[in-house]
Image 1 (tube, rainbow, N blue to C red):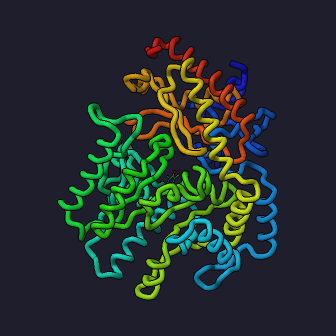
Image 2: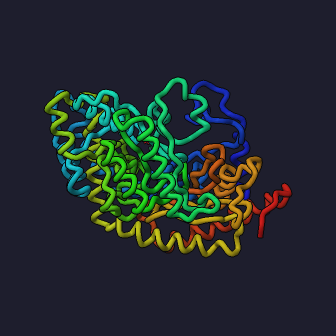
Length: 470
Ligand SMILES: Cc1ncc(COP(=O)(O)O)c(C=O)c1O
């Protein structure tokens, strides 16, 4: 290891003065400091001592266009000078209209309307309210029951954190929030013993149909799924077959099907929306966030069909909102992000470079027994870290695999997003999901540095006598 860590360690131990950065709130279990990032350009970040890091996970899979993107910055500046705020409940703005049109044109038929908020959690919250308001307007007032997959992540507001499939969080909030019905996510790397992937999917679809029958369809409101998962499942990809079965059950029972594409949308998986891969399983509502603001502005979108929105507006209306909804600067960023993706062909790049990255990560596997699985779609990719690839056994919790690897990666010039979810019940993984602008040469550099990081981690495991199957 070089001596970057020594420098970080000199500021360890929290913050004693007034104020402090956001991380003063976070768990101190690991008690190691974060680099102080002062500059970004392309896929790189620099700290205050000039050390460079590759932004391997696009922050939290948000910086789809990398840093210092001139088109976005110029659009923000121009918008701020022209009009920085006008409240959407009392006015219309050109930027709101232009972004809604740009989104609807890319999303295609069935997604003509766009409700704009400040991020993914807010947009998920809006979708819950939208589903409820629709049911209410149709006098289906008993429809309140939500369904989600375990594991999954849908956000941090009280409603969206409850909707998320994370048992560690459930314990804390279950008495305060509306808890959903949970269905097992069909995890491709962890198919229950004795079942094929298809049989597992059939089993889950059957559980869904049975549960709806048990509680009564008239009480069921909406099903939320991430078509390609994020941090909660490590980029687990749902099959078209599974989604089509879930679609049929939703149709038979009047349940709204929502795709949470906060991570997977906005081009990351090689389509503008991942939903576009599944013609037989079109969702009613799609949630976009992260990549559509690309880290330059807080922006979340609920894409919904005119055939649901327009009658609703004509009856009860959907009259919920926040001060920053359809904010002109955020809208200008969204428009510029779409223009940039198209001008540089970045959605196709996500697919091409994503395939290359996946194959490079797979090529590390023979020399690196702790990589159990590499999965994902486009540039939404995760590598699962295990003690034994064949049995799929995870490393013991004390190894703190995601956090330790994240820290070690800094020494190799990688800024990596990894943390344990669900207390590691479903495994540990690293999100290797760089910006959509990443080149194959940059992938080569990234994978070499990752291999060096994982070698350090394996050395550490052997120093601590943690068994790894070779
Ligand atoms: C799949 C998914 N849904 C929802 C959210 C919440 O989005 P935000 O953090 O923008 O509120 C996230 C954030 O990580 C996410 O990955």
